[in-house]
Length: 304
Image (cartoon, rainbow, N blue to C red; front, side, top):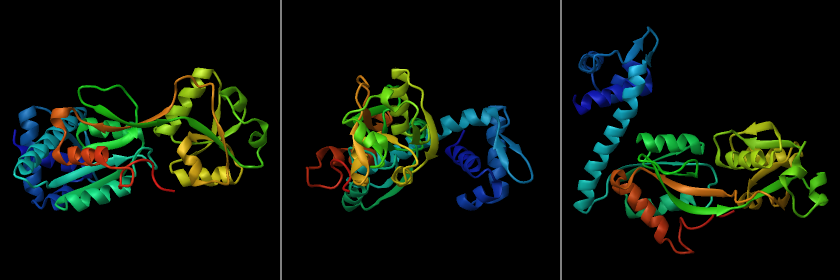
């Protein structure tokens, strides 16, 4: 099995199309098809279901994709490690993050990183914490800033960034705004909620809080961006339970502490592969974050 066979296989799996994958790889379509057939013969299993419009992975193909991506990520890390020993940091930094993550100002951190390592190509992807964890574990991302979604495994480790309590946001005219200075989950029973999609860290935290309290809630308005959520609350269409730092984004909204939640907090982390599999670019970014002073980009909460 050759690395180029795995590279070809991953490209076809991503594009779901032989012609597009061949164009991206700058190889002939016949050569790409021959490479995939060679791989299928060696593995003694079909990897794709081919139709006239696209190709999809078989069960064997899905299993191979996980390992192929991890192998290719390790090869990239090896090349980058050798370059780092020679005094030049180059290659690609594939970074994932949730929106408005606490504990790091992502844009400022990346600007500082680019200033120090201009030869590294930066790729950024926003997604929910569950998806980001899976992509780091699979080797598709070098590093991600996310909500802690699971315990460390042999494919994924976490470095704590910060933790904070959850806060209730509502319109100033809402009954909760003047009902009490501090609220518990029971006080919110029967309310209409605005929340993120289930994969997002704040949603997972809020779901945990209400499940632990035995309080059922209805998420009537579900969004996938922070400002969309705040707009809906601003129009008095529902209330939201969010990490405390979100209150700075819309000061006109009423912000009330949420208590009676035990030890549950919104905890953000940097997700990385195991120590030996972490690439030089990811290590350099994390080092920059850890050594940033209070007035340097990358440290603390995002500016508002």
